Image (cartoon, rainbow, N blue to C red; front, side, top):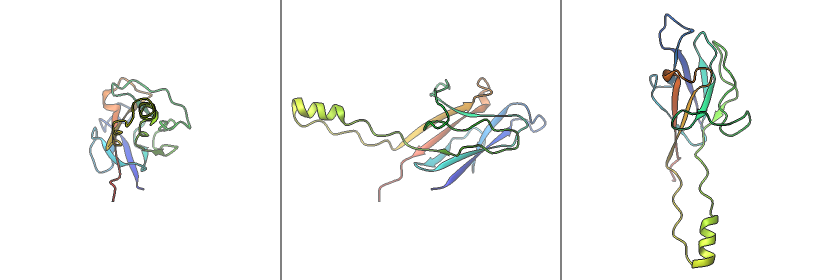
Length: 147
């Protein structure tokens, strides 16, 4: 699986410690990164300030994750450094079959289960600068097509 890079770049090149933006590989700042399910992502901080990518909900409210959790993205990234650990992008697991089993037990054949997600959006921001709109990003995780 490929390893994708998102550069953290200054919004204004004359102010490297000022506001930043997330610039995905092969795209411009503010454009979502498109990655396949199972790929990995690293962030490279080219600014003069520390940043920390952090998962959020769709309204850019932080999620409660800790290092080692599946949603954890990176430790703080010092100026001129790369992120650690590497962030694995994955589609969410399929829904639990339990409601279908209960339905089958009581009423017979259940309706078909919904198909797995074809894509999923992972929203994130810089935990150190949560109110800086330019320091928000999206990773679009795409399901690997069946052969």
